[in-house]
Image 1 (tube, rainbow, N blue to C red):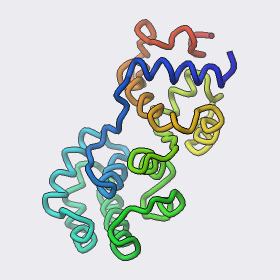
Image 2: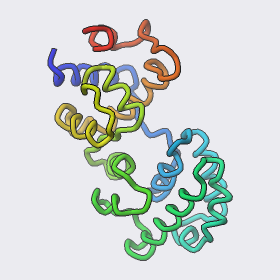
Image 3: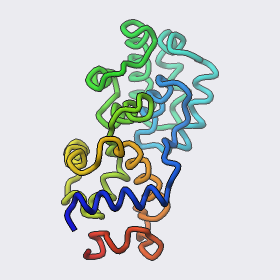
Image 4: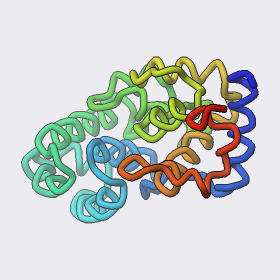
Length: 211
């Protein structure tokens, strides 16, 4: 089985296993996802979803956050960890959205990368989830699983994993595939315990099992 064949079969099976592929960060506007994905660094999505409720209650739009003192933002987002740097990035990002983009999130990958605190993972998430564009989000689940499954060979650097997956994953499948990897990584192919290979839908085609 070639890597391309393995990839397509994995996509097919995960689609059946997790039909409702979606981001686990709560948001109803693009700028909110931008904030949540920054807060999610070294923090669980569940905690971020709780913390942002308080943030938006006090600062309900881009303008309010752009005008908010960084110290006040930091007080609210502190439970997500790295409060000072995250608050600084959020403040700077909202100012740019207000001053350069009329309060809107730019629909351009390179423009997203220029925003404070936005890396390739965040930009891909925005492009895929908000704008419906081809995207591959190489978070920790994705990197761990595609290495285990044999889609990449001992590559840990997010950008290199992303570039390798672009050659294997059909563009229209990339975003949902990455969301399904998160689901599978949390429920079956776990990191902190032994993976539950006995109830994995990919056991017979997983490189971890010598296939």
